[in-house]
Image (cartoon, rainbow, N blue to C red; front, top):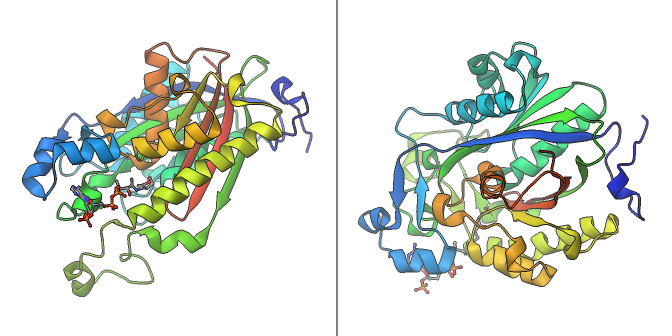
Length: 347
Ligand code: UT7
């Protein structure tokens, strides 16, 4: 394998990226039209608009109508992203779908999506990393493109969280929403753009702090698991909160330092959107000023695999992210999973 150092990584940097340079060639998102507001949630559980806004930063989230699946959201985002890259679905060689709410246990959502969009030349797979699914999928797809395996990969982060949320549990139901984001990752010869480096971790000791206990091989579905409401998200919020603040800072700092960079070099910091307070604490510790931080959790809640592309899309549409800008992505999710990707924006 030939290592091609991207020009950005040459000043004292040792990127983990191997092979030819890759770039994010396009990005698109989709959220279902139906809104679930804090006021709506006040009718369902013992909560208030004020509590939700103060403790999480969320005002509203989008949720699907019955029968709409993750692949349906992914399809809308994917077709727009492929078109924006100037490609056709048949140009896509690989599909990676990051999700924790696949349409079904199998076949994979990547297979269902491939058929729905007519990407007849693609292979692909689902990637399970919860809220780190987008950073992990981006790295996995980028390195397969970098190896020469395919020219163009489609990375989709999509979740229908409303399908696994207990709308009787006020500690979780106020947090999550549904949505999808997709980007095309392509090989590039443009030295002014690229997926420059990545850093990822898992820590399985955190598993019980955030999980859906039943429905898998350990506890197959039964009347008992349904009666005990075990097919829903269970979370120890404070444990996840503390881990997320610490690890978002730690992994971001490590990735910057390895590349000889400081927060001053960044145009934008785009974190997974789980809680406004997590993002504010982590970026304050890291030394990234608020004007370089994208927070759009107010409108979408935590859409798990889709938050980072939804935040990137807002940054592009508002003119805060332009070609050549240096952006750091960071995520912490169930598992625990931790991820960070350094990107020089490609369009
Ligand atoms: O994407 C990765 C996954 N998730 C996360 O990163 C989320 C991480 N955790 C969090 O964001 C926060 O821990 C939460 C938003 C989940 C909870 O906020 P908190 O400030 O940690 O609240 P808490 O769990 O310590 O609860 C404080 C109080 C409790 O009442 P008591 O025991 O003090 O009387 C809760 O029962 O707030 C109560 N509470 C609520 N009150 C009104 C919990 N949920 C609600 C609610 N409305 N929805």
